[in-house]
Amino acid sequence: MAEFNVRGSKSIITKLICMSLYHNIDFTITNMNFCNDVMEMLEFLETVGKHYVIKEDKLEISKAKPFTLVMSNYHLIIKNIGNILGFVLPFLAFADYKFVDITLDNTISELSIQPLVECLNKAGANIILEKNTIHIKKHTHVNNIFNVDIAESCKYLPSLMMFATTRIGVTRIVVNNLNKIVSQSYVKMTEDILKLFSIQIRVAANEVYVVTSNKNKVENVFLACDPDYSTAASFWFYSYLMRKPVFIKTITYIHQPDFYFYDIIKRFNVPCSIKNGIMSIEVENIRKPPEFISVDMKTMPEQIITLAFMALFSGKKVVITGCKTLTRKESNRISGILVNIDILGGQAKFANDELTIFPFEKEPESCLLNTFYDHRFAMTFLVLQQKYKNLQIDNIDCINKVYPDFNIF
Image 1 (cartoon, rainbow, N blue to C red):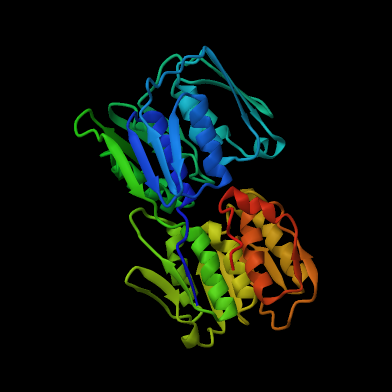
Image 2: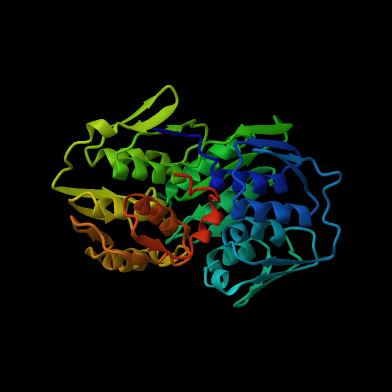
Protein backbone atom coordinates (compact mmCIF):
# COMPACT_ATOMS: atom_id res chain seq x y z
CA MET A 1 0.00 0.00 0.00
CA ALA A 2 1.27 3.49 -0.88
CA GLU A 3 -0.09 6.88 0.03
CA PHE A 4 1.00 9.92 -1.95
CA ASN A 5 0.62 13.61 -1.27
CA VAL A 6 1.02 14.65 -4.90
CA ARG A 7 2.76 17.97 -5.43
CA GLY A 8 0.82 20.96 -6.65
CA SER A 9 -0.40 21.41 -10.20
CA LYS A 10 2.20 23.04 -12.41
CA SER A 11 -0.57 24.54 -14.55
CA ILE A 12 -2.16 26.30 -11.58
CA ILE A 13 1.13 27.47 -10.09
CA THR A 14 2.48 28.97 -13.33
CA LYS A 15 -0.78 30.85 -13.88
CA LEU A 16 -0.62 32.30 -10.37
CA ILE A 17 2.98 33.38 -10.94
CA CYS A 18 1.86 35.04 -14.18
CA MET A 19 -0.90 36.86 -12.30
CA SER A 20 1.71 38.23 -9.89
CA LEU A 21 3.10 40.18 -12.84
CA TYR A 22 -0.17 42.01 -13.20
CA HIS A 23 -1.33 42.44 -9.60
CA ASN A 24 0.81 44.09 -6.95
CA ILE A 25 -0.35 42.02 -3.99
CA ASP A 26 1.16 39.37 -1.72
CA PHE A 27 0.98 35.76 -2.90
CA THR A 28 1.41 32.63 -0.78
CA ILE A 29 1.23 29.20 -2.42
CA THR A 30 1.70 25.94 -0.51
CA ASN A 31 2.10 22.38 -1.80
CA MET A 32 4.49 23.78 -4.38
CA ASN A 33 5.96 21.91 -7.31
CA PHE A 34 9.38 23.34 -8.14
CA CYS A 35 9.65 21.80 -11.59
CA ASN A 36 11.54 23.39 -14.49
CA ASP A 37 8.47 25.24 -15.82
CA VAL A 38 7.85 26.85 -12.43
CA MET A 39 11.49 27.74 -11.84
CA GLU A 40 11.78 29.44 -15.23
CA MET A 41 8.70 31.53 -14.47
CA LEU A 42 10.26 32.52 -11.15
CA GLU A 43 13.52 33.45 -12.89
CA PHE A 44 11.50 35.69 -15.17
CA LEU A 45 9.91 37.37 -12.14
CA GLU A 46 13.35 38.26 -10.85
CA THR A 47 14.40 39.87 -14.12
CA VAL A 48 11.47 42.31 -13.96
CA GLY A 49 11.89 43.21 -10.30
CA LYS A 50 9.51 40.91 -8.48
CA HIS A 51 10.72 39.33 -5.24
CA TYR A 52 9.96 35.83 -4.00
CA VAL A 53 10.99 33.50 -1.18
CA ILE A 54 10.94 29.69 -1.16
CA LYS A 55 10.33 27.99 2.20
CA GLU A 56 10.25 24.20 1.85
CA ASP A 57 7.01 23.56 -0.06
CA LYS A 58 5.81 27.18 0.16
CA LEU A 59 6.31 30.09 -2.24
CA GLU A 60 5.86 33.70 -1.18
CA ILE A 61 5.79 36.47 -3.78
CA SER A 62 5.87 39.91 -2.20
CA LYS A 63 4.53 43.21 -3.40
CA ALA A 64 7.10 45.02 -5.48
CA LYS A 65 8.95 47.75 -3.64
CA PRO A 66 8.53 49.29 -6.13
CA PHE A 67 7.61 47.06 -9.08
CA THR A 68 8.72 49.16 -12.03
CA LEU A 69 10.18 48.30 -15.40
CA VAL A 70 13.21 50.51 -15.11
CA MET A 71 15.16 49.38 -18.18
CA SER A 72 14.52 50.98 -21.53
CA ASN A 73 15.39 47.75 -23.34
CA TYR A 74 14.91 44.13 -22.27
CA HIS A 75 16.38 40.87 -23.55
CA LEU A 76 14.92 37.48 -22.59
CA ILE A 77 16.36 34.09 -23.50
CA ILE A 78 14.00 31.13 -23.34
CA LYS A 79 16.19 28.04 -23.36
CA ASN A 80 14.07 24.95 -22.85
CA ILE A 81 10.52 25.62 -21.73
CA GLY A 82 7.76 26.63 -24.13
CA ASN A 83 4.93 27.37 -21.70
CA ILE A 84 6.51 30.53 -20.33
CA LEU A 85 6.40 32.18 -23.76
CA GLY A 86 2.62 32.33 -24.03
CA PHE A 87 2.30 33.68 -20.49
CA VAL A 88 4.88 36.47 -20.69
CA LEU A 89 4.32 37.65 -24.26
CA PRO A 90 1.21 39.78 -23.50
CA PHE A 91 2.98 41.22 -20.45
CA LEU A 92 6.05 42.25 -22.47
CA ALA A 93 4.00 43.39 -25.47
CA PHE A 94 2.23 46.05 -23.39
CA ALA A 95 4.94 46.88 -20.85
CA ASP A 96 6.81 50.19 -20.74
CA TYR A 97 9.98 48.94 -22.39
CA LYS A 98 11.06 50.75 -25.54
CA PHE A 99 12.34 47.54 -27.08
CA VAL A 100 12.25 43.83 -26.17
CA ASP A 101 14.14 40.94 -27.77
CA ILE A 102 13.17 37.33 -26.99
CA THR A 103 15.57 34.63 -28.18
CA LEU A 104 14.16 31.13 -28.55
CA ASP A 105 15.91 27.81 -28.90
CA ASN A 106 15.24 25.64 -31.93
CA THR A 107 12.67 23.45 -30.17
CA ILE A 108 10.53 26.34 -29.00
CA SER A 109 10.83 28.15 -32.31
CA GLU A 110 8.92 25.27 -33.87
CA LEU A 111 5.92 25.93 -31.63
CA SER A 112 3.44 28.16 -33.41
CA ILE A 113 2.72 31.37 -31.53
CA GLN A 114 1.54 33.15 -34.65
CA PRO A 115 -2.13 33.32 -33.53
CA LEU A 116 -1.15 35.04 -30.27
CA VAL A 117 1.21 37.46 -32.03
CA GLU A 118 -1.46 38.43 -34.55
CA CYS A 119 -4.02 38.89 -31.79
CA LEU A 120 -1.73 41.16 -29.74
CA ASN A 121 -0.72 43.22 -32.78
CA LYS A 122 -4.36 43.85 -33.66
CA ALA A 123 -4.88 45.02 -30.07
CA GLY A 124 -2.11 47.64 -30.32
CA ALA A 125 1.16 45.73 -29.84
CA ASN A 126 4.12 45.96 -32.20
CA ILE A 127 5.60 42.46 -32.43
CA ILE A 128 7.82 41.14 -35.21
CA LEU A 129 8.19 37.35 -35.26
CA GLU A 130 11.25 35.72 -36.79
CA LYS A 131 12.33 32.07 -36.74
CA ASN A 132 14.27 32.18 -33.47
CA THR A 133 13.68 35.74 -32.30
CA ILE A 134 10.75 37.89 -31.29
CA HIS A 135 11.19 41.67 -31.51
CA ILE A 136 8.79 43.84 -29.54
CA LYS A 137 8.72 47.61 -30.03
CA LYS A 138 6.85 50.10 -27.86
CA HIS A 139 3.10 49.63 -28.24
CA THR A 140 0.95 52.47 -29.50
CA HIS A 141 -2.26 51.70 -27.59
CA VAL A 142 -4.14 48.85 -25.89
CA ASN A 143 -7.58 47.78 -27.06
CA ASN A 144 -10.25 46.33 -24.83
CA ILE A 145 -11.16 43.88 -27.56
CA PHE A 146 -8.95 40.93 -28.52
CA ASN A 147 -9.63 38.70 -31.52
CA VAL A 148 -7.86 35.35 -31.39
CA ASP A 149 -7.88 32.34 -33.69
CA ILE A 150 -7.73 29.17 -31.59
CA ALA A 151 -9.27 26.73 -34.01
CA GLU A 152 -6.61 24.13 -33.18
CA SER A 153 -5.86 24.88 -29.53
CA CYS A 154 -7.03 27.18 -26.76
CA LYS A 155 -3.63 27.40 -25.07
CA TYR A 156 -3.37 31.18 -25.57
CA LEU A 157 -6.84 32.03 -24.33
CA PRO A 158 -5.84 31.73 -20.62
CA SER A 159 -2.92 34.08 -21.29
CA LEU A 160 -5.25 36.69 -22.78
CA MET A 161 -7.74 36.25 -19.94
CA MET A 162 -5.01 36.93 -17.39
CA PHE A 163 -3.75 40.02 -19.22
CA ALA A 164 -7.34 41.29 -19.48
CA THR A 165 -7.46 41.53 -15.68
CA THR A 166 -5.21 44.60 -15.95
CA ARG A 167 -7.90 46.51 -17.85
CA ILE A 168 -10.57 48.30 -15.84
CA GLY A 169 -14.08 47.60 -17.07
CA VAL A 170 -15.03 44.88 -19.52
CA THR A 171 -12.49 43.30 -21.84
CA ARG A 172 -13.93 41.28 -24.68
CA ILE A 173 -12.03 38.33 -26.16
CA VAL A 174 -13.56 37.19 -29.44
CA VAL A 175 -12.79 33.53 -30.15
CA ASN A 176 -13.41 31.49 -33.27
CA ASN A 177 -15.73 28.55 -32.55
CA LEU A 178 -15.48 28.86 -28.77
CA ASN A 179 -17.90 26.02 -28.17
CA LYS A 180 -15.81 23.68 -30.32
CA ILE A 181 -12.29 24.46 -29.16
CA VAL A 182 -9.94 21.80 -27.86
CA SER A 183 -9.30 21.65 -24.11
CA GLN A 184 -12.07 24.01 -22.99
CA SER A 185 -11.59 22.56 -19.52
CA TYR A 186 -8.29 24.45 -19.21
CA VAL A 187 -10.23 27.68 -19.76
CA LYS A 188 -12.44 26.69 -16.84
CA MET A 189 -9.30 26.26 -14.74
CA THR A 190 -8.25 29.83 -15.58
CA GLU A 191 -11.71 31.08 -14.68
CA ASP A 192 -11.42 29.45 -11.25
CA ILE A 193 -8.03 31.09 -10.71
CA LEU A 194 -9.32 34.54 -11.66
CA LYS A 195 -12.11 34.20 -9.11
CA LEU A 196 -9.39 34.30 -6.43
CA PHE A 197 -8.87 37.92 -7.53
CA SER A 198 -12.59 38.80 -7.45
CA ILE A 199 -12.58 38.91 -11.24
CA GLN A 200 -15.68 37.70 -13.05
CA ILE A 201 -15.80 35.84 -16.34
CA ARG A 202 -18.82 35.71 -18.65
CA VAL A 203 -19.02 33.48 -21.69
CA ALA A 204 -21.55 34.11 -24.45
CA ALA A 205 -21.60 32.69 -27.96
CA ASN A 206 -18.02 33.03 -29.23
CA GLU A 207 -16.91 35.68 -26.73
CA VAL A 208 -15.29 35.68 -23.31
CA TYR A 209 -15.84 38.76 -21.15
CA VAL A 210 -13.36 39.59 -18.37
CA VAL A 211 -14.92 42.01 -15.87
CA THR A 212 -12.57 43.97 -13.61
CA SER A 213 -13.28 46.93 -11.34
CA ASN A 214 -11.48 49.00 -8.71
CA LYS A 215 -13.99 47.79 -6.13
CA ASN A 216 -13.46 44.69 -4.00
CA LYS A 217 -9.80 44.39 -4.94
CA VAL A 218 -8.03 41.64 -3.01
CA GLU A 219 -5.04 42.47 -0.81
CA ASN A 220 -3.42 39.03 -0.95
CA VAL A 221 -3.89 35.55 -2.38
CA PHE A 222 -3.28 32.37 -0.37
CA LEU A 223 -3.74 28.98 -2.00
CA ALA A 224 -3.02 25.45 -0.84
CA CYS A 225 -2.47 24.21 -4.38
CA ASP A 226 -4.47 21.27 -5.65
CA PRO A 227 -2.47 18.10 -6.42
CA ASP A 228 -1.25 17.73 -9.98
CA TYR A 229 -3.91 15.31 -11.19
CA SER A 230 -2.07 14.90 -14.46
CA THR A 231 0.70 13.21 -12.46
CA ALA A 232 -1.82 11.45 -10.21
CA ALA A 233 -3.13 9.69 -13.32
CA SER A 234 0.25 7.97 -13.66
CA PHE A 235 -0.05 6.68 -10.09
CA TRP A 236 -3.54 5.37 -10.87
CA PHE A 237 -2.12 3.64 -13.94
CA TYR A 238 0.55 2.09 -11.70
CA SER A 239 -2.13 0.87 -9.28
CA TYR A 240 -4.11 -0.71 -12.15
CA LEU A 241 -1.08 -2.30 -13.83
CA MET A 242 0.53 -3.67 -10.65
CA ARG A 243 -2.73 -4.46 -8.82
CA LYS A 244 -1.38 -2.56 -5.84
CA PRO A 245 -3.45 -0.06 -3.81
CA VAL A 246 -2.38 3.57 -4.14
CA PHE A 247 -4.03 6.34 -2.16
CA ILE A 248 -3.93 9.95 -3.42
CA LYS A 249 -4.75 12.82 -1.10
CA THR A 250 -7.04 15.15 -2.97
CA ILE A 251 -8.52 18.65 -2.83
CA THR A 252 -10.51 20.30 -5.61
CA TYR A 253 -10.44 24.05 -5.18
CA ILE A 254 -9.62 24.68 -8.83
CA HIS A 255 -10.88 22.72 -11.83
CA GLN A 256 -8.35 20.36 -13.41
CA PRO A 257 -9.60 18.20 -16.28
CA ASP A 258 -7.16 15.39 -15.45
CA PHE A 259 -8.98 14.88 -12.14
CA TYR A 260 -11.56 12.94 -14.17
CA PHE A 261 -9.09 10.40 -15.50
CA TYR A 262 -10.33 8.11 -12.74
CA ASP A 263 -13.71 8.16 -14.54
CA ILE A 264 -11.94 6.85 -17.63
CA ILE A 265 -10.38 4.07 -15.55
CA LYS A 266 -13.88 3.04 -14.45
CA ARG A 267 -14.68 2.31 -18.10
CA PHE A 268 -12.29 -0.67 -17.77
CA ASN A 269 -14.47 -2.10 -14.97
CA VAL A 270 -12.05 -0.77 -12.38
CA PRO A 271 -13.81 0.42 -9.21
CA CYS A 272 -12.57 3.80 -7.95
CA SER A 273 -13.57 5.66 -4.83
CA ILE A 274 -13.15 9.01 -3.10
CA LYS A 275 -13.51 8.75 0.68
CA ASN A 276 -12.48 11.37 3.23
CA GLY A 277 -10.36 13.25 0.72
CA ILE A 278 -8.54 10.11 -0.50
CA MET A 279 -8.82 8.79 -4.07
CA SER A 280 -8.02 5.13 -4.69
CA ILE A 281 -8.50 2.22 -7.05
CA GLU A 282 -10.07 -0.84 -5.42
CA VAL A 283 -7.57 -3.25 -6.92
CA GLU A 284 -9.09 -6.26 -5.20
CA ASN A 285 -12.36 -5.67 -7.10
CA ILE A 286 -11.05 -5.17 -10.64
CA ARG A 287 -13.25 -7.08 -13.06
CA LYS A 288 -12.81 -8.24 -16.65
CA PRO A 289 -13.06 -5.17 -18.94
CA PRO A 290 -15.60 -4.91 -21.79
CA GLU A 291 -14.67 -6.46 -25.13
CA PHE A 292 -14.53 -3.00 -26.74
CA ILE A 293 -14.01 0.43 -25.20
CA SER A 294 -14.32 3.82 -26.92
CA VAL A 295 -13.13 6.93 -25.08
CA ASP A 296 -13.34 10.59 -26.14
CA MET A 297 -10.32 12.40 -24.64
CA LYS A 298 -10.81 15.89 -26.04
CA THR A 299 -11.24 17.34 -22.53
CA MET A 300 -7.96 15.85 -21.28
CA PRO A 301 -5.60 15.28 -24.22
CA GLU A 302 -2.58 15.28 -21.87
CA GLN A 303 -3.63 11.81 -20.67
CA ILE A 304 -3.89 10.09 -24.05
CA ILE A 305 -0.39 8.60 -23.76
CA THR A 306 -1.17 7.13 -20.34
CA LEU A 307 -4.49 5.78 -21.60
CA ALA A 308 -2.95 4.30 -24.75
CA PHE A 309 -0.48 2.14 -22.83
CA MET A 310 -3.04 1.24 -20.19
CA ALA A 311 -5.26 0.10 -23.09
CA LEU A 312 -2.40 -1.91 -24.61
CA PHE A 313 -2.13 -4.08 -21.51
CA SER A 314 -5.86 -4.25 -20.76
CA GLY A 315 -6.34 -7.18 -23.13
CA LYS A 316 -9.14 -5.43 -25.00
CA LYS A 317 -9.51 -3.29 -28.11
CA VAL A 318 -9.71 0.40 -27.24
CA VAL A 319 -10.51 3.32 -29.56
CA ILE A 320 -9.43 6.78 -28.42
CA THR A 321 -10.84 9.92 -30.05
CA GLY A 322 -10.08 13.59 -29.37
CA CYS A 323 -6.49 13.22 -30.56
CA LYS A 324 -6.54 16.25 -32.83
CA THR A 325 -3.77 18.25 -31.13
CA LEU A 326 -1.40 15.42 -30.24
CA THR A 327 0.89 15.99 -33.20
CA ARG A 328 1.75 19.47 -31.88
CA LYS A 329 2.67 18.82 -28.25
CA GLU A 330 6.22 18.50 -26.86
CA SER A 331 6.61 15.75 -29.42
CA ASN A 332 4.40 14.29 -32.10
CA ARG A 333 2.60 12.14 -29.54
CA ILE A 334 0.58 10.18 -32.07
CA SER A 335 3.75 9.11 -33.89
CA GLY A 336 5.46 8.43 -30.55
CA ILE A 337 2.64 6.17 -29.36
CA LEU A 338 2.66 4.19 -32.60
CA VAL A 339 6.46 3.86 -32.65
CA ASN A 340 6.75 2.69 -29.04
CA ILE A 341 3.86 0.23 -29.25
CA ASP A 342 5.59 -1.26 -32.29
CA ILE A 343 8.86 -1.45 -30.31
CA LEU A 344 7.02 -3.35 -27.57
CA GLY A 345 5.64 -5.77 -30.15
CA GLY A 346 2.06 -4.52 -30.00
CA GLN A 347 -0.26 -3.12 -32.64
CA ALA A 348 -1.98 0.27 -32.98
CA LYS A 349 -3.22 2.44 -35.80
CA PHE A 350 -4.32 6.05 -36.26
CA ALA A 351 -6.84 7.30 -38.84
CA ASN A 352 -9.49 10.03 -38.96
CA ASP A 353 -8.65 11.34 -35.47
CA GLU A 354 -9.10 7.84 -34.00
CA LEU A 355 -6.30 6.01 -32.23
CA THR A 356 -7.01 2.28 -32.05
CA ILE A 357 -5.09 0.11 -29.60
CA PHE A 358 -5.28 -3.66 -30.11
CA PRO A 359 -4.92 -6.12 -27.23
CA PHE A 360 -1.38 -7.19 -26.35
CA GLU A 361 -1.38 -10.36 -24.29
CA LYS A 362 2.24 -11.40 -24.02
CA GLU A 363 5.23 -10.26 -22.01
CA PRO A 364 7.22 -7.59 -23.86
CA GLU A 365 10.77 -8.56 -24.73
CA SER A 366 13.76 -6.47 -23.71
CA CYS A 367 13.73 -3.21 -25.68
CA LEU A 368 14.55 0.50 -25.51
CA LEU A 369 11.55 2.84 -25.38
CA ASN A 370 11.90 6.32 -26.87
CA THR A 371 10.56 9.28 -24.87
CA PHE A 372 11.26 11.80 -27.66
CA TYR A 373 12.23 14.13 -24.76
CA ASP A 374 8.54 14.21 -23.79
CA HIS A 375 7.77 13.94 -20.07
CA ARG A 376 4.43 12.18 -20.64
CA PHE A 377 6.15 9.27 -22.39
CA ALA A 378 8.84 9.12 -19.70
CA MET A 379 6.33 8.99 -16.83
CA THR A 380 4.22 6.32 -18.55
CA PHE A 381 7.26 4.18 -19.35
CA LEU A 382 8.54 4.41 -15.76
CA VAL A 383 5.22 2.89 -14.68
CA LEU A 384 5.56 0.09 -17.25
CA GLN A 385 9.11 -0.57 -16.06
CA GLN A 386 7.84 -1.37 -12.57
CA LYS A 387 6.18 -4.51 -13.98
CA TYR A 388 8.40 -5.25 -16.94
CA LYS A 389 11.93 -4.87 -15.58
CA ASN A 390 13.56 -5.68 -18.92
CA LEU A 391 12.32 -2.41 -20.47
CA GLN A 392 14.85 0.39 -20.93
CA ILE A 393 13.97 4.09 -21.27
CA ASP A 394 15.96 6.87 -22.90
CA ASN A 395 16.10 10.48 -21.68
CA ILE A 396 13.97 10.31 -18.53
CA ASP A 397 15.41 13.66 -17.39
CA CYS A 398 12.63 15.35 -19.38
CA ILE A 399 10.39 14.57 -16.39
CA ASN A 400 12.04 17.51 -14.61
CA LYS A 401 9.87 19.78 -16.74
CA VAL A 402 6.77 18.98 -14.68
CA TYR A 403 7.55 16.65 -11.74
CA PRO A 404 11.26 16.21 -10.88
CA ASP A 405 10.79 13.53 -8.20
CA PHE A 406 8.23 11.41 -10.02
CA ASN A 407 10.35 8.22 -9.95
CA ILE A 408 9.39 7.39 -6.34
CA PHE A 409 7.85 3.94 -6.64
